Length: 218
Image 1 (tube, helix red, strand yellow):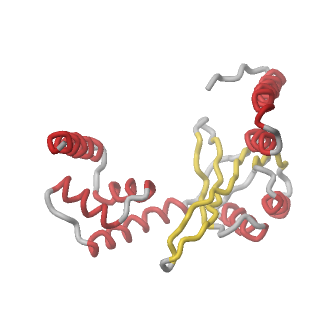
Image 2 (image 1 turned 45 degrees about the horizontal axis):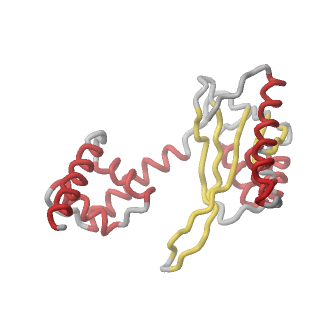
Image 3 (image 1 turned 120 degrees about the vertical axis):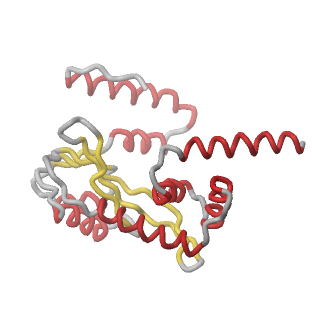
């Protein structure tokens, strides 16, 4: 058992070192660690494994401040170019605030840019998906020069729907087909799930047929 543990430890450390070779700075490593839930104390252990000495909590805190500056600069960057199609959704995450854990909505907007690549337009804390939160989020995007939106796609949450009409009155709204299928499944018995999956696939094929395109198999 001790030999097996030693082998696993060697493989793990070797994998960590190889993984972090792609990063140019400690700040980038920290940014990569936090989204996957690695705690500050665990960061100390990892830095000791990588470099033979622990990085102090004060140093980690200072590095976080530097990373935060870069993150905020990216988050508030001016939006350049045309973004006719905008996809929006709320993602719920648990946050530790003052020693208490609570669910919080992260409002996210994604687009396909002029080069055909997916681009994150913005992400912000919304606390909850009500009209006020979505209005503030959309106004923030518009303040960063998000203009020309012709179609907004979302899950048809009432607060989101009202906010789109208030901030982007010239844009049309379309319900996300993935969310629609999930809503169908949520009110259908398990015995009919296979039928619903087939029906959703059929709807998808019909949609692409109308567009003159062939759907890609996932």
